[in-house]
Amino acid sequence: MTTPTPAPRIEQPQHPCAAQRPGTQPTLIRRSPQARAGQTQPLSEALKVGLLAFDATKTSASDVDYPVDVVTYRPDTFTLQEQRFSGQDLDPLRSYWQNAIEAAVTLADPVMQPLVWRLDNAPPAHTHYGDNDPR
Image (cartoon, rainbow, N blue to C red; front, top):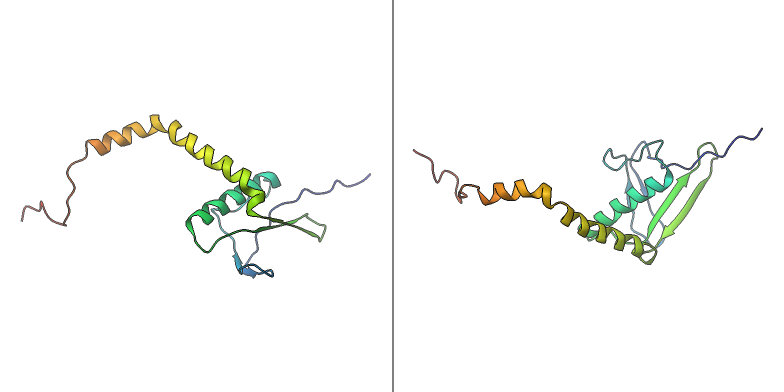
């Protein structure tokens, strides 16, 4: 009877470590509850979330850019697998997310209505602290 090959999973280092490859910036790898993949999360889901987080970070931080190096570990195999993704590789995914965000803005209209109403009916803003202070 053969033992099935364990599925790859995303590993989070116990302590921060720096990773650098020729031609790339040093990268700090750390544990983060916000971006941590679950132990039972399929590799496809972990990769999807990781690439979405990378894309969001790339949009807001000028020192983040392609390529994206992804390393996976198959439990109990003592081997790592590595794949580099270029910006061109990820263009279709980036376009998909952009379209999904644009659609989400429209779909949010019913949820936004009470917030817009509150803004439309908000009291005048105070430009200086204590403007309407009765002292």
